[in-house]
Image (cartoon, rainbow, N blue to C red; front, side):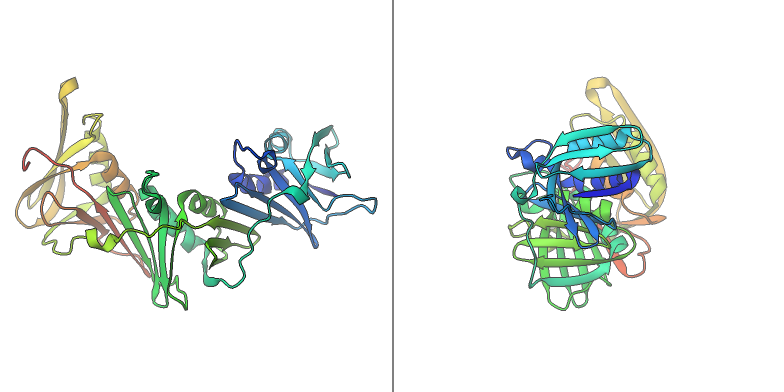
Length: 376
């Protein structure tokens, strides 16, 4: 097998598939990237047996008549490090019948030992799959706006992914870790059949890196999901656990409503949080008709901070506590000028939404309060 490519173009494609290469594996071949001839193109593949990535390059690949391989697995780290250290130059790639791989440029020659591509694990093929036609930009937005709330608790595996519910009237992407919850409803992400599935967060973040504005097809079949972009595919094993009934934790009777400028609130929370306890990250919101008084204290370090943010509040004055880290992430992932907080009581979750939703979508975030001695 031989071909010639730009070092920069080849490196970019390798870095895309490298996201699925495990850093350490009991199977050395998994630490490689598979090179294959695919018609008039070169196909690169990588997998950790849970997540796989394929990338195509429009490069003519020659296969020698003297028993040259059509598939070869090349050590990913050494290959990528070599290309990263090169300037933008043409690189000739050649693999012989013993799977020795040689890179040649005008300035040098680099040789490494590869593996027989036939020994590389076969990637699953999705045949009779449910398909969702969407765009890469829409999928990327769904991932970016929900991924921060995915749980890292291995004891609750279902919550370690993003939950998709897609039907004829639109789709929902949901993520929660028990402390905050995000539900993003997208009117244009539709499917003829009603389907729902949970995708691991790592696979979703890799799909977001690959996604472009071009059309994207999501295929679900046999415990796997595939995200097909122009010349790339991200394929992952689904989380085979029932997702929690997230609707049950969303409070419905929220008669207390607070409207504030998002950036003003976010900046104030970040500053006051610097003076909160490093153990609890607890801040206190004292909400009155015309403003929100944000405060925090760290008794161990004898420090405290207070700020006031103007706002409009409808309802009886109240005091509620939040984890500053969670509140900061919620406010950071809303992209509206003003946000609406809805409360029922200081010990029930607060619902946060953009005051004005974007066309074709509806975003809702929920954050659980922390107990303050004010109402303990």
